[in-house]
Length: 155
Ligand SMILES: [Fe+2]
Ligand SMILES: [Fe+2]
Image 1 (cartoon, rainbow, N blue to C red):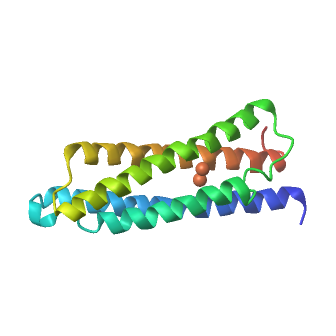
Image 2: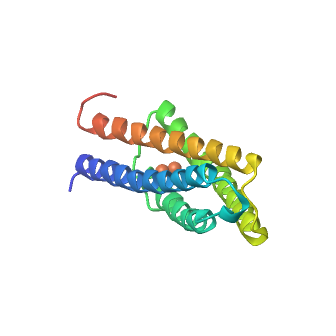
């Protein structure tokens, strides 16, 4: 397999990975919306603690793949602008991970107290979901640009 088609394959795998991440985020969002619509202490944290714990594991594996499995590492000889974009995106992983861990803790506490989700928790969660979507979208765009660059479609 030549370098160009290898990178195109990587871009496709990144897009597939990100589709799975978006699916998981959508499920979390739907559960929050459901809990908010059915407000009341009896609804507590619902499936949210379990969904967030699964997502936390999923996201860590995903970031590992991007950092060590060679997704973005496979692209060598990047121009300085693209290199900076890769660095910036990978640098966001740690703060996104911390954000998800904090949500896991918050949801687990609500579950233990059988308490409804606080406003602060819900707005923090919505903000993190938006940050994650933005991060993955920027990676998709970069991967596509890099794959195009290989096929001579742009730079
Ligand atoms: Fe990433
Ligand atoms: Fe990603």
